[in-house]
Every structure is written in C-alpha cells, then in structure tokens.
Length: 308
Image (cartoon, rainbow, N blue to C red; front, side, top):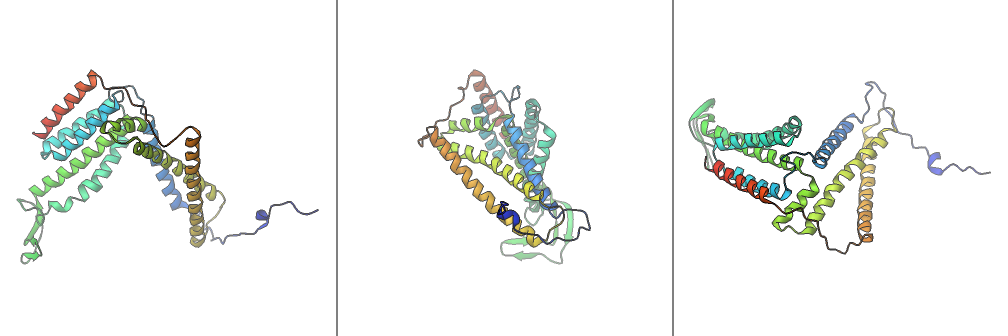
C-alpha cells in the first residue's frame, strides 16, 4: 500500500543556519519595525473608531466640525503674529481638554511632526545669510563677504532675531495645523467625517473610494502582521540574510495576491447586494441653531486672531 503522506511534507527544504551566539533571532529588527507600525496604525484606528464619547466636542455635528476646521486652517495660514499663533495653540489645547482625548500620546505625535516639518525644515531661515536683521547669536566670522549667484554671505554669520521669529511662526503654524487635524480625527468617526465633507459637494463616489481604501489599509496591515508572525514561528534560530530576503520577497508576493483577492471579493459582495455604480451616502442631521451659533463664534474668533 502506497504512502498517503503529501509530497510537500516529504520535500526537504532545510535552511542554512548560523550559530546562535547572541540568543537573538535574526528577525528582531524586522519584528520591531512591523510591530511598531502595526501598533501605531491600530492605535489610530481604535481612537478614531471609538470617538463616541459624550461631551461637547464629540457631540457636535460633523458638518459644523468640518466647516470650522477648514476655516480655522485658513486662519492659521494667514495669521502672521506670534501672539495670535500662541493663542490659537492655547485654544486648541482647551478643545482637547473638553474632548476627553488622551492628550499625552497625541501631543507626542504632534510635537514630533511639528519638530520635523516645522522646525528642522525652517531652521536655516534663522541665519542672517537667509534672513538679514539684528544679530542675536554669533556663530562664525569669515575673512570677507562672499557672493554666490543671488546669495550674499556676510563676513559675520549668526542667528538674527527676525529669523528666529520666522522659524517660531512656521513651527507654530505646523503645530496648530497638525493638532487641529488630530482633534478632528479623534473626536469624530471616519464615516461621519466623510459624510460631512459632502457639504463641499465632494462626489459620493470619491468619498466611497476613500472609505474603502481607509478600511483596506487596516485589513492589509493586519494581514502583513499575521503573515510575518506565521513565518517567524517556523524558525527557532538565526537564518542567513540571503534566506531572509528570499522569505520576505515571497511573502510580499503572497500578500499582493491576497490583497487582490480581497478587492475582488469585496466588489463581488457589493454587486450581490445591489451595487449598480451609484453611491448614496446617508447624510447627517441638518445643522441646528446651536451649530449656527458655534459657527458664528468661530468666525468672530478667527477674525480676532487674524488681526491681533
């Protein structure tokens, strides 16, 4: 009687292994990267989806939030006074307090993004090479001034007061814009925000594409994490980099195929439930007198910040 053991179980595919001298798996760096990325995305998803707290900020109509958000972002971009930017930052901080969001974790992300895109990018503007003005901190002295194309490099190089103001203003603009965006995301669920953007006559088809992409990102991230853990569980010691690259490349192709299959199944499910190419999103309740009053207050406050 012939053997009934499947052929793939009889196939010998032994991997070359390295002596385990450190006790650490070769997957450690890849493991940390995937774990941190998955944790960040899950945190964002859970905080956005659990935005059902009962307080003043979360109970506002999403249409009111979206209109106020767009208007305030414009005010942040136009306000040139440092005092107005600081007052805007304080106002957004108070809104965070009213919303009941975990501020420590959120403000860590805000400060990181503002530091990278608001401070580091604009830091050279503090030098008198770019922004002339009254010298605040002396850095270096050259033998003579130099001219490069349209740029003039003075003999004394340092940080000017005017340059510091520009850097601080750009930092505060990025800081306020990011904090306001996260406040909007964390205080409203994503579907309600998408429906609210219909007030600007955004096509429903585009909103549905964004919604499906939003959902699929988290499904794909979960698939990647589960696939990596399944591969990792098959190894008990270190493997060579050549073998590791081969495994990762194979998993990438598998994930791509699974993603394509998920898209096809989702579309088939939509067709089976009556999808005919036309999408109608159920709108939120119309804004009431309270929402109108809030919009008026936001408009007045915006003008006040603009002219401070």
